[in-house]
Amino acid sequence: MLKSGFTTGTAAAAAVKAALTRIVSGADPGFVDILLLTGDRIQIPVHCCKQISGCRASATVIKDAGDDPDVTHGAEIGAIVTLCLAADFQERRDVQKSKEPLNITITGGEGVGQVTLPGLEIPPGEPAINLGPRKMIIQAVKDVLDELQIKQNDKVDTVCVEVFVPRGKVLAEKTLNARLGIIGGISILGTTGIVRPMSHAAYEATIASSLSVARAGGCARVVLTTGRRSERFAQSAIPDLPEIAFVQIGDFFKISLEAASQKGVSTITLAVLFGKAIKMAQGFAHTHAAKSDLSLVVLSEWATAVTNEREFSRRLSLANTARQALSMIMESHPVLISDVGRRMIASARRFTGENIALQGMIFDYTGKVLYNSEVLNF
Picture 1 (cartoon, rainbow, N blue to C red):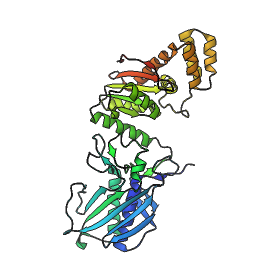
Picture 2 (picture 1 turned 45 degrees about the vertical axis):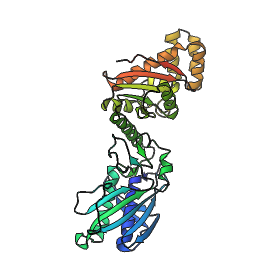
Picture 3 (picture 1 turned 45 degrees about the horizontal axis):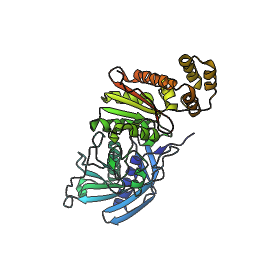
Picture 4 (picture 1 turned 90 degrees about the vertical axis):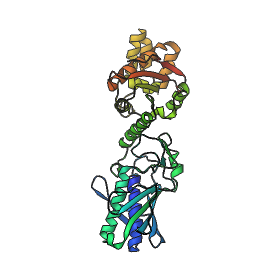
């Protein structure tokens, strides 16, 4: 059974709780207990904790993503916490205050990205610390103060929290943050606080965020690609569109088309490699190999209908890979690629409805455009 982990938001909340515990009790906790957004609790080990001054301390936690292939797995997530007396606190423009009598301010330090584009749940100018993690951080602060019975009459007016990620800027280069307008580091994320191994939720959330950024940036047309290679090919083929208009959807064919439709996109271009085009043409909602067969047998049936050459279709059904099948098609019956393209668009139409223009592009494995529907189909 695959092991679950915890999010960067949970790690940040744990670091906050450890640092605040150090300030108010003088103890270095080996573990802290964190309330997740699900209502459950989890114990998080503390990596290190140190006193900076009488009312200031820092702590870090090592992010554990479990068996999920997360770029932040093993990353150090930290927080510097400062207790401020009423007379010492001066309001700053870059902080977010809670509406509670106790002010809890949350800022982003080293390695935490800054939001620069509209369309995300955090507005431009704010650190990329999502609402879920902010809620967990506030709860962690209250837990410590409640447990140690520190109230307003102890003259604690404000708790200042600065979240930091020492290698955040480097880690961010392995994410889509820059595409989303998150600059300078990673995002502090988490909708539940727990990372489920191989969960699709994070990828789906990234797709939705990318589409939101594209719409907020004025893009009525988006180009859906399945990965970095097809995206690179699409950007070369359609150079006049801004980078935010290109959205990597992975294997999420149905979900991405539905999300684009719901966000008010007027034109969708599907720009994919031939292997993915076959799966999309067959109408699979999810195109991962584990979810759908490449089914060159089906492709061979289409070939029979298009070419009426049964021997060619038989040989096509015996191809080992889509790449081999494509080579055979290009040698004798390239018209079959257009048939796959038309079927791909027809499948996409099932997930978009009738009011969105669709365009299909199919590339070979070097980036050559093999099919372009050109006229957008309504």
